[in-house]
Image (cartoon, rainbow, N blue to C red; front, side, top):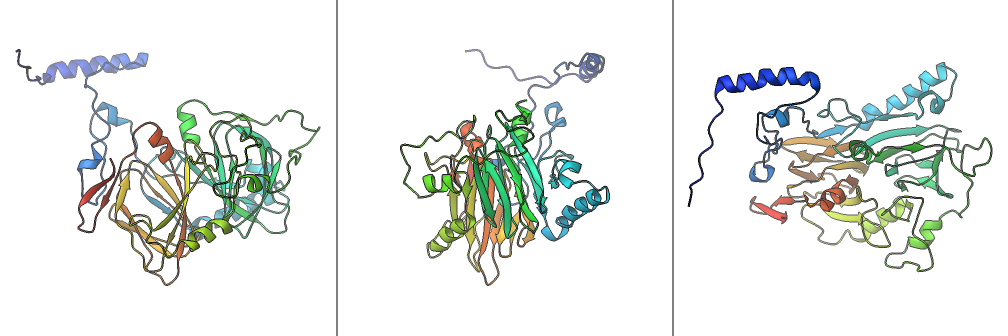
Length: 400
């Protein structure tokens, strides 16, 4: 049997010659390979300390890579900018919606060089609609949701179903659905927009349509063709799915037909489970799912809600998925890769993939967090793994 020969190091002069040749070839937008598949990612799961893991390796492949960083957006710091946008528009004597398309700001991750995304797969924005503001009917390829932060949340009409919103509601606008947003109340409404935009952008599948067929002349909103609460009546009872109703909403695929998930129902469900042991890594956690098949609300994004009881501390966990958190109630802190982030109501923070994290509620009242995660996408491509620290502080496999 022939023994494999050890690989030989490339002579310095030969490597220099190749790099010089590459500099010349670069004018033709080509790269002459000088490194054999240098990995961009070190094996995160072999590094068991709580410091950041899964760092970028060295080499050509890693040179253009970026990694999302953990970050906390404090509501008391970012929310004033919503009013500043309105001030600029008011000075120009033009509606903020017309002035800037949306009266909102997008969150940018400090590790992603200014890209309009909070993780490699998710985009988040914070929007405010003043009385009378309206975003005309449109549809697009990304899946999107609104998480309502204000006491009242205006309305969103999706495929003819008008959803009047309140704090804590999650309203879906699945890919390929006609929808419009507005505020016909006397007070401003605020929400968080979450989209899988970066995934679609990477795949070159982004599109937007604002020419709604059969729309009345000069109409900016769609006609309400379904009674309010339509999807709630059809799919709002757990384990009960009507056989006579179509689950298709718009021209999208594999998305939930239940459009509006009520915040009061989510909190009531969490509260009813408060006496349970819960999960050592998550507390009392609920997946918010497609009522027809139990799948995630979108193929690319999963939603959940968790209750952290007063005095509760979770164990450390890390996973190959990235998660965005919104603080809906209470105060607490999350330790991410050795750094502690203190959070309070309406704050938003992100835990990128591979990083150890744990939650602590040291206060005297319960806390409620909403989550948006790319775990469904990571699972579909066969790359989801999770590890945790047990009671002996040993690293164990949760999902291998």
